[in-house]
Length: 343
Image (cartoon, rainbow, N blue to C red):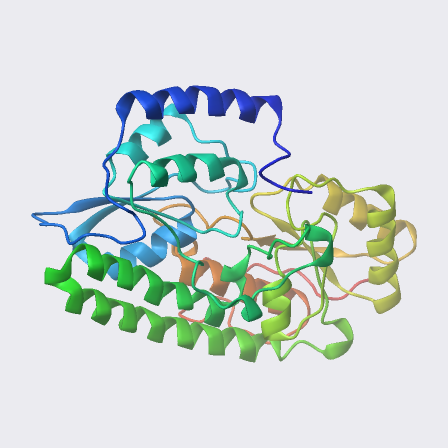
């Protein structure tokens, strides 16, 4: 399934008015792939798509820029269609950053049009080596976009953002480099924490079962097999066979918990839980994971560090591993886990 070519009538209608807005307002004429040095006075504006991208940009830009994320808590980027106000924000922004790899599939034409008209538009994953990306055979040659679930891989985007900001605002280039290095040190510590706590889960029950296939990078990096009800994009639909397959896995392997996701409907997960129970194995709802969106703005879980800390800690405790209840930095609001034993 090709994300860009499979949109509904709603998306097509959205693109019609988007084309009108862009043609009326117009853009600059500079080549966005070769950013010119700006005479930056005061704070400049940056618009990002997801919270994960905005978090990188905020950390690197510091106080030099005003950073806005278009997608709020719980928003599914696979299906997100830009609103009129989103287009205006991007038109007025000095720089635009998005995740890329077709994650924001319904916004692809928006990016192409803005970029073609001279707006600096960058996918933060653009320079991650192809060999480091996962390319599922059923995804028609497109890489899996959920790169942020591998902390070490996602940290490569930090250098990319820093380089673009350095080129845009050369006066403060040294500050951007320093901010990027400080943030990457934090990400290194986070990567180590995730690796250690996931490793404490007993191997026999170390299976991550989720709503959709967003955790393959997490699986590869932190050595925990992952299974899901839906495919990589939430536009795919789960069938009875998908649910039965997961029920059989949970019952056979005696996996103690299954996880819902903050941006995905939980109905399919409940169907799996009910199916396992009908076969005599009580599977716990291990908690909500942040897959395609971070937590609420202003909370620890609303940062990338907090998002991954929450996920790793919740998974570990729910599957019988050892981790501090309040996470790596003691900032989680209690990863409440009832029991990790099925009955």
